[in-house]
Length: 502
Image (cartoon, rainbow, N blue to C red):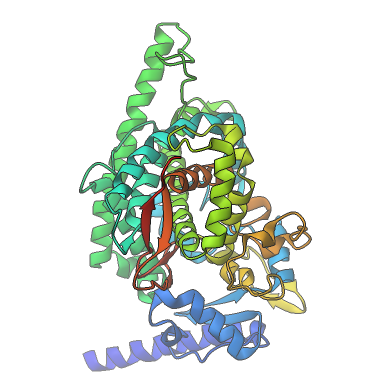
């Protein structure tokens, strides 16, 4: 009896898979696809999720296509590096919902700006956008500097070494910065040898990525019986617990100040303009006259924490590795900083200083071209739509392969060469804006991109003023890997030499 039930179950699952496969095939048969096996789909091509973006490029080149159909479990995804299709998708006012994979972020980010849809997204986006005005962001430059000072001290311990991995130091610095700017608290991740909060942030990224590439874990009924789910719950208890306690504390402080009928001081005891963290702005914001709930605030703070931590840390680290291995570029960036700061390695940056770092800004753009923090992102069709003669069915997931179009020689000649000058005004006229999309584009572009750029400029300039960056010995070749962000699976190793003041 049990054998008959098992056979019936297997036949039923295989029948349903065939139905789903041919459903998508009937719409998308003109789009090339690697061989799809029952249940696992194209999974054999993606045995190692870390190699997913490189695998997609290899397959696209193999089939001589800019769009690729991939089957994962009972679903199909079309990944594309086609410029016109990307422009169509990112400019659309209707194809705005995030892809299936983003649902794996919801236990952590809830209905924050990254994953929310419809009217909830529109109202929250409208409310949050003003908080990233440059006059508000300017107040955080002191936070960049103070945490950068700790970073410099940590890096100095590696002077004289022929090789060390810089990424762990950058990621802890970025976490300290985002906690202070988002929640107004210092978690001292750089100073504590083992930060539980930092560990949980890192583990959540790994859990989300692992679940995304395992079709069996897409289903909550299976996932909730896995060790991965239990690990996720422990991490969320730490992350949400910390955020909830800070929200409650700050809400009580605001009520206390209101009961005293005193206007909060706009400057600190030293006369400096008082920093207002992102959380405090949310606590004082409203939608249609009502204040945000604690859950809404937590979702947005968590989203800001995720979006502004690993992504920025990866960008800074890839830039350091690229500068270390391109001495001409590094020297040009350093000479620009000497014109701004002279030989003063300690003077804090000002907002005007950051605006003068024109060449370093080109370095950041070239870094994000080669190593976009989000190597691909996805959209879901809320209804059938037709593009270039192909009808994409409702609920279809479409992926935008930023990593692919950034390395396309049609838009960036000699794409593997690190050449910041390609983004100078005389070389990059902006006529193909959707060929460079590290922060996405269109209605759902990254609201925090200006914040990220300022943090990267401040941190990189501080490091370059203090150290000359050298290639690791022996030579270190990056093993680019797609996690929830793009990173290097074998670290980002460089060497340092102290710069001497003259």
